Image (cartoon, rainbow, N blue to C red):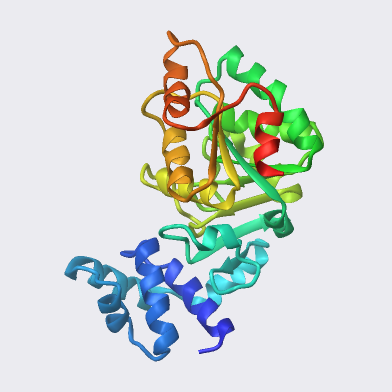
Length: 288
């Protein structure tokens, strides 16, 4: 099966229910070997249980491929698959890579030096000051920031990068037609127009809880390193940092007050080998 046909099949599979990222990769591998597999045979290749097999088969049959292709085209939403040369090399080699990514904006940003910056959803003056100290120098060295368009530090990373004239990539855990949190709607639209907005989820996908740890693997997987500004001991930011560690990427952390719960996570990262960041050069010397 030619790459174009495989990409359309991946698009079709991404619109289906009953399967996730791992199942799609398994199905893709099977299709490369045998492009004529039925939906039932694909379910078997993906090792779906009986319930998910039925959900998948019903969903697969219900997808109107041409109608969906037309809708995405009208909304100017494009996609790349793991088969494409434009698919980011770093992301391709993570555990459980997304088979397909939907995007709006400038895809060439994926070729830049990418630094993930994450932190607490409840920003403190300390976290904002740390970001204000570090970002200008990073942007001046043409570092492109990557974050998750969440409340708190994520939002500040995107906003301040744009204010400084830098480039930023937003990775979201919903379809590109949803805004979560809703207060970030204008920022998300700005990133989609002038920067790069990415999701592995099709249009109409709501912000379900399990989507965000999955989104975090993309944030970490795209980037040369991950900087954690502030984080509780148990937090999504630490999940992202640990994913980066698992993939052999650099992890940076801003130290904080040992009595502040929002510094417990970053201090613990430093204790276990993350690089302590006191100035921008501590990051740049590892990435340049």
